[in-house]
Length: 276
Image (cartoon, rainbow, N blue to C red; front, side):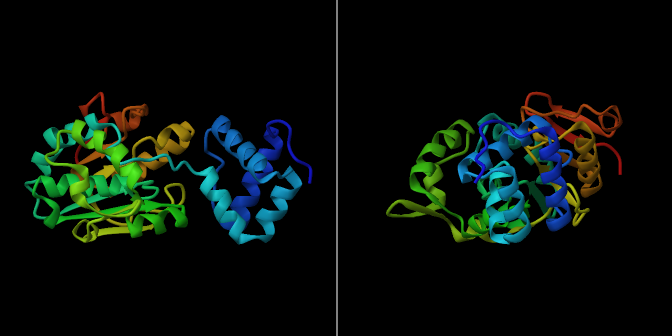
């Protein structure tokens, strides 16, 4: 095999992007070029593949594509990541959401489910879980399988415990898990009204109306044009006066969408939809 010794060229990257779009329907053309190139190079180095071998496997091995997808998509996640965000939700958003009879929440790009379950715990502790329904979506089916199981390393849960305490929620994170040996399973009551399914932010459309959408630390991997397209999807998916959470590293740069959202928390980049 022709093992790569350096980063692939822009032309080779375009060939891979076009191949994946043609064969599997996944379009990575509007991902930031630098990030995509790093991840493609990493796949080739880990798998000890040259560009020809990579294209051959993508064309002929659907199982390899799932491994490829897991490496290319960003799956960095943890429970109660950025505790100040959950504090802001608790103080600035939940009092408003509590006035609804039903609350629908979308955790977009949910990976293996840690954020969706963090939101479920937050709603439970606020006394809002029974009237909440949480949708977790991702393009990676392997990550979604992990999310549906709700089983995590106990070591990770202990690491997430500090996030939980800093978020200002009562009790302990372990109160919401059943532990056995080195694994921790989310309590079944938190799985109720929590649904994980495949949704592609790039190509799929509106599938429900939500009072809250959280898509944090995802936009940084997309080019500006794609960011605007997804903002359009989120705007159409939100109920009037619904909330959009983008995370501390991302904000709304588009002049068009700055007029369609009101900034609720500039540090955590929480916005509220203006009008219908």
